[in-house]
Length: 268
Image 1 (tube, helix red, strand yellow):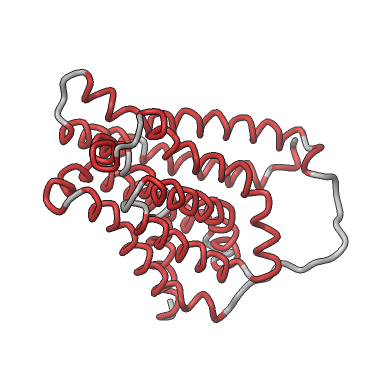
Image 2: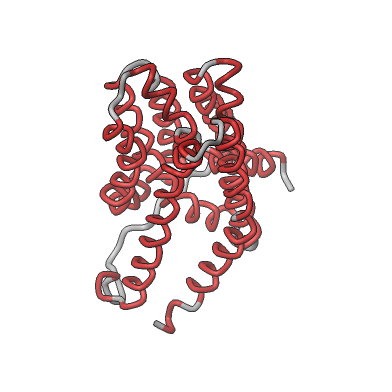
């Protein structure tokens, strides 16, 4: 494998690490955020609600950005925006909301374009690279969720959350080789039926929506619930990380199932 290919794989791993970590490490630190910034309990819930709204509302427009400017370039700037939003969101309630919005928009871009870019860069190894991307995304989230309280106790919750920006910047450095070969989808007359009329697309959307609802609801409130039942914040954080670790193998199988489903989409 060429050196540029190896660097790109590291870039994919680091980009994948940014796709859940900025959200997952927040929930164990909700009490720190509330005490320091004076955020109300109701507003705290929006920290994870805003990204989900971004996924739903912004994701349909992402493919058009990829077609016009190239998937690799759009992903690069998305991670740049994520790094900035994540770094500045710890300074005040206003910055917290704006930064969370920027993070949500950035992750929406990565959610859409990462699988497409992997298929373009590694057409003969889509399954393997998808598993690498899924494994990395989950593993980084596990580490961030499980150790966020311990890290916050040593350096402060602000620096603990800002550490994700370092991960994003490193990912951008390793992503630079991808910018030498930017993919832009060809424009032309569309063929086939509209996706809005595809029965399988609606089934898949409903399934993905329910899965996301369960995951992000758990992601937001499990540490708080554990603390309310007598656990320390550190114990709740580690148990929360362990819970995500248990889902790692199933996440890989889930992604593999999606690949198979895509290859047999004509059956719907």
